[in-house]
Amino acid sequence: MRTGRGALGVAGGLVLVVLAAVGYALPPSFDPPPLKPDKAFTALPAQPTAEIAQVPVTGPISIETVSIPAKGTDLLATIWVPLRPGPHPAMVFVQGSGSSAGSEFAAQAEWLAKAGIMTLSWDKRTVGYSFRSRDFALLADDALRMVRHLGKRPDVDHSRIGLWGVSEGTWVVPIAAQASKEIGFAVMVSAPNVSPMRQVAWALNEQLLRLYAPVGVRDLLARAMGVVDFDFLRHDPVPPLKKVTQPVLSLYGTMDPSIPFVESTQTLMTSLAAGGNDDYTIRFLGGADHAMRVHGGGGRYAPGYLETLANWIYGLPKSGQPADGVRMAGATPVQRFQASDVPVAPWYAGGTVLGLALCLAAVGYVAGPVAELVVRLRGRTTPAETNARLWPPIRRRLRRMAWTGLGLLLSVVAFITLLVLFSIHQAGAWPAVLAGWLVVRVLAVLILFQEVTAVAAVVSGLREGWQPSRWQHVAIAGVLGGTGLLLAFAAYYGLFSFPW
Image (cartoon, rainbow, N blue to C red; front, side):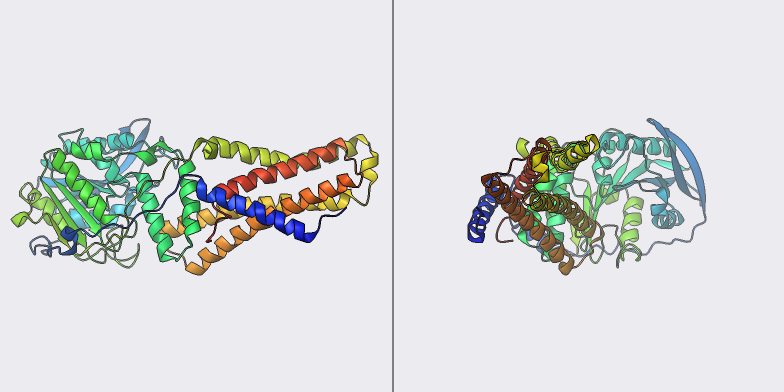
């Protein structure tokens, strides 16, 4: 007795509705609300002309390479030394995320050295730092060792040795600054001043909006991020900021799509004020990106960036108190949505459960072929195996389901990776996002109906007297069970939700 197509369609539709409801009902949800405009950011004064005054950069310099001992490793550092009479202000560069080399700061380090400011950069540690594990306190210790190395030099002005940090480095700089009086100032470039998780979620949401991605794509990414349990992603930057007593220069580029400007600035001001520190200067540079450049990573530095930096350092300690009380100036920053946090995934969707489910699905998909191979190697057959009418069609269905399940997993991983790369490089096009999302959704729906029709085929076969062998039971249970697990997680990640 065969199951009709109408009945299969109804069954598949009902299951689809249930799975779609699961995607709506289960947490975590991520829907950043709009950020109300703050009048303090809509009418900023222009930068004082003294800050962007031309700086002579013709002084002779020398370049030194040293190895500095650190915890668990040695760090190779490069120092750009002004050869004009000293002592000189000095500044240590603190890197952003990734295993970056000190040479990435060579252009601005050389410029500042020719302007009379000694600079140091180093190759970031690889011991104790990885994609999964990042100890900001350990990175702060590295930065302090660089400061102490400069502090031993007779040609350095010990009252004006400071730290310059960019992006991830701005979570490091306050930890180092509040721990040592040897640090005379702090420069924070493109500082999120929110947790890494909130910053990444905000940047991804902005990128998805620019690429006209469907709402479901944001939900997929948010729930995937909720599974990630890297401790550093929940780092709270506020407590270290409250303990910073040194003058702070904070610089943002208005073309940086990865920083929630308004909330970052508000957090910086309220944190410093809570610690009694009113020596801060905040500047927004029009046209500048995350690295203070214009027209991409290979472009030149934004007009006024290097001049602002050099003049502020030269003017310390007086420049720590902005002239005429103008603490915030420059181009107008725009932030449309709040930097909301991504909730931690519930236990039933956490990394452990997800990993276990994927392992069980994989075992289920390979259990049937392995059992069949074992039976053939033993040379055994059963009457059920000779049933050429009922088993071969079911076996073909199971094989197609296994390949579709594998394709769904690979497509989801590839799609998420694509979106993350688009966000990191601020690239991509909306057709690529829509095409990737369409592939993922089609595969999810396809494997759903493969599951429904396979169950119907097995039930029909049993009604016609089919008696599966032991290994056939293993194959059926493994593939149907594994696919069921994939469907449950596909529902949780919103692959069946509407609107799409």
